[in-house]
Amino acid sequence: MPLARLNKFISRRPTEESETAPPSSVSVTAARMPEGQRAYVIGDIHGRKDLLTPLLEQIAMDRARREDAQAHLIFLGDYVDRGPDSSAVIDLLLELKQTEMNVITLKGNHEAAMMSFLQDPMKGKRWLHYGGDATLRSYGIDLVLAELTEEKIREAGKKLKKNLPDSHLQFISSLGASHVMGDYFFVHAGIEPGRPVDDQKEHDLLWIRDDFLEHTGLFDKVIVHGHSIIPEPEFKDNRIGIDTGAFYSNILTCLVLEGESKEIL
Image (cartoon, rainbow, N blue to C red; front, side):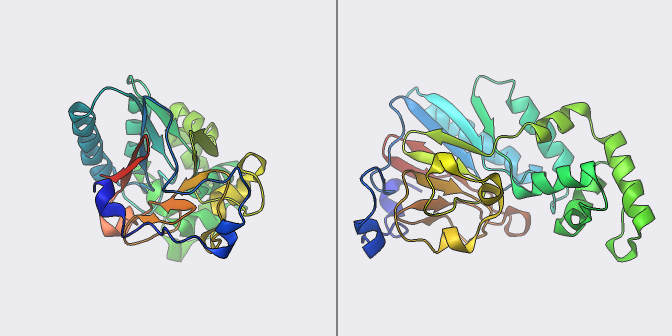
């Protein structure tokens, strides 16, 4: 979707809050990437390797038709749960990290919940109801949610520790919570309004919804996020949302940022 066709999504009318925003704030229309840099930003995958693979092919074709630039592949988290191929998605992400592209993989709330389950299955058992049961199946572990008992939950935790490759555990446990490039702040869920982007709590970066989504004032960076499902990419004065609900909509979205351009693959 070229920039010209994005105009209907981008609100250009300043709100009362944005008019009084601090001088360091930046709007979507003014936001820029650093010179010679291009970012491909991918929303929540949720175990849908079947969608990720063709999207990566589209990215490769897009790179081939453009002028040379340093390419950055930025994933906004939620690689696991709900979809059928969580394990295979992580395998693919690990393969991508061996390519010439700069691959940045951020943490989502589902990876955080998975880590909680690995550390203590009983304390982290809610993860199973977030789609963690599908992730277990991708690692060869069958668990029926309607038949959960403490014994079965603890046994599932033991099996996951046994079946989870060391490379997958290292990948999940080493994910960062945010990334900055140019005028953009990349994060899974959003930020707490009123706090600078470099003074955020990780819990908010992974879980926040309404306080962030309903905020109309500008931030010190444009926030690029997933986490909150929308039918199509959402461009606001202060943020860009790209979680199009891949696990049920079959639409995995990629945002392309270069210079002042914002496009959708």
